[in-house]
Amino acid sequence: MREKILSVLEKNARISVHDLAILLGEDEVEVANCIGDMEAENVICGYHTLINWDGTSEEKVTALIEVKVTPQRGMGFDKIAERIYQYSEVHAVYLMSGAFDFTVIIEGKTMRGVAQFVSDKLAPMDEVLSTATHFVLKKYKDHGTILVSKPHDERMLVTP
Amino acid sequence: MRNPLADKVIDIKPSGIRKFFDIVSEMKDAISLGVGEPDFDTPWHIREEGIYSLEKGKTFYTSNSGLKELKQEISNYLERRINVKYDPNHEIMVTVGGSEAIDLAMRAMLNPGEEVLIPQPCYVSYLPCCQLADGVPVFINLKEENQFRLTKQELLDAVTDKTKILVLAFPNNPTGAVMSREDLMDIAEVCIEKDIFVISDEIYSELTYSGEHVSIASLPGMRERTVVINGFSKAYAMTGWRLGYAAAPELILSQMLKIHQFAIMCAPTTSQYAAVVAMRDGDPDVAKMRESYNQRRRYVVTRLRDMGLDCFEPYGAFYVFPSIKRFNMSSEEFATKLLQTQKVAVVPGTAFGDCGEGFLRISYAYSLENLKIALDRIEVFVKGLEA
Image 1: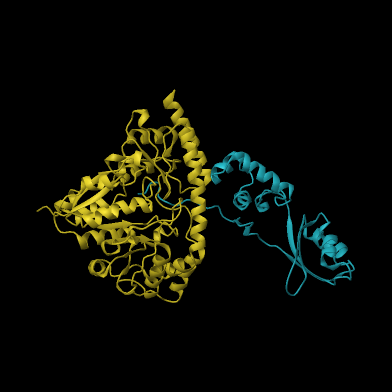
Image 2 (image 1 turned 60 degrees about the vertical axis):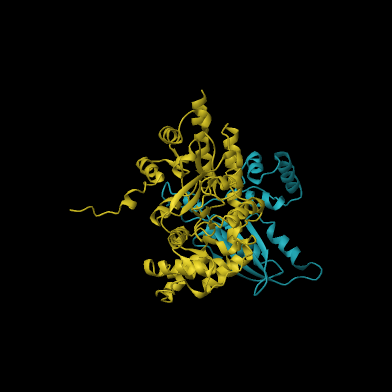
């Protein structure tokens, strides 16, 4: 049941427990309990809204930064990641396979702000060997949702 | 000038759906729950294969019966899903939608005056196809108390010595009814005893929500007397690609192919290339869409029941078929008033045969948000009738 609940909530966090129970053909109380458990266990970590900021007057820039580090004895990658993800500007941190170690996604108000974060905070860290910053120019699709166009129902209104 | 027309064509009644479509299309900002096709786009990897085939210049005719690879994939699929083996070279043909296959089967099998049993309510094309093939349609009126399944007794009551074909269409459009293995075994028994052939239209087979779909062709003694019809429209959301297929013993299929060869030549090549990929890699897409339909199905049935409409639980296709008998109006009247006052389009049950009177077909091939708005409006309408 957990996976089924999550697959619905992932796409629509605002659905009521009542409707969710109907969709899944499960008991409402059980669904509520299950969601409660998953919140407690940090399986469900929050309920966010997917926003296409390009459609607002708010200025925002997103940058994807490739970070190479040297893991220190006794503190591995996790400790370094922690030092990075504590910053509120940091939107996401992933440990990567391949040519670099971390992908760090930063959201800021201006390019300069992001650049400053990289040069003042990220790059000077002892463990960080190098960074490569890529600014996002346009978001086409995010969280499985296409941002640039709204689907339009082109079917005929009544068909057999 | 002489009458340029054939009497048997003039005698065919225009589709009841068409009439309703004309009313709906006049109406601006109507929400429709009247569509008989998936709301999903064809999965991208399937579309992409169609595009790729065009880029490669694969724009020629295929063989009459269809691309070899596709027939092989269909054969694999039928073995995997309904547990019946068909020889891809002689027992499978690719058609322009399931609709063409229905027409071909009737034309290949019927002699003038032979009777075709058509359980109703049903899809709109069995009757005209039967008429055009000079068959005599005999309706069996399915009942709500049997969840719109065909029973052995109903079948026996309709059989005469002229009966040649039984049309079986489960999961059913418009009722959403399905037939279990046990139900089909009863029917198969009669078919064998009375020497009746079956046209089994299984176009909604992948949209079954109560266990596995069972094909009557998989029952003992039935493969040799069944034409299985299926296609890509519903399962893979490929309606506009116009692609279906028929699987039948060579004796029947070779004659169907003859008609197809002269009337159609071959099914669209681009669609056939795309369909190869659909059959080979499409199972996860189908599973995902099925789960989504199933969620909406539960939602729509619950909402309709909560607002006091009698609604049997449909376990297939993407339709709900609630009864409106207690409001003392005809289906058409109900649907027209609902459209005029609340701007929601549903299809009157009578569009699928006279015994659809007292019912509506509501399609749930819509996003949940859409269904919610439409059902809210239907609820307002129903409350208004009760007041």
